[in-house]
Length: 184
Image (cartoon, rainbow, N blue to C red; front, side):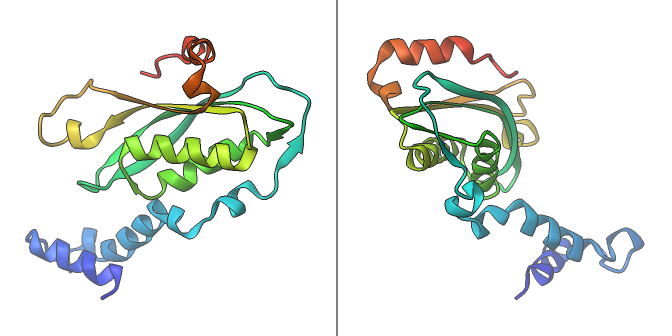
C-alpha cells in the first residue's frame, strides 16, 4: 500500500469525503509532505558533512547557537520544534559551520523523541570532528503537549548531551551552559 493510499484510508476512517473539493488532492499532498518531513532517513552523515572538515590550530570552544528545527514526535506523529545549540572543543580540525545545521536537519527529519535527537547530534559531531568534547542543548515545544493531552501551551523541554571533555570537565561544561540562552 502506498503512502497516498494510507492517507486516503485515514481520511475515510475519520468520516471525510475524498471527493469534496478541499480534499481531492490531499492524500497526494499529505504523502509528499510526510516524505519531506521524514527525509532524514535517506541521508547519511557523510553526505551531509561532505568532507567539510578543515585543519585548524584553534583549541577553544566553538559554539553554534539557535539552529531552528522541526521534527515529528514518534509517539503521536505530531510536530515538536525549537532551537539547537552545539559546541565543541576542536582537536586539530574544525567543521564547516553550515554542517551543524545540516546534521541537525538530518536527524530532525526522522521520527524522534527530543532526548534521542540531542544525543544523536552530539555523537555525530563528535564522530565527524574527533573533538575533545561536544555539547548539545535543545529547547523545544511539543505539540503533543499543546494540542492534545494536558494542553499546556507554554511548556518547553530542555535536553542536554555531553561527550568527552564536556562530560568530564565541570568548568568547561559550566562555561558552555553560561553562554547558551533559554530559547523560549
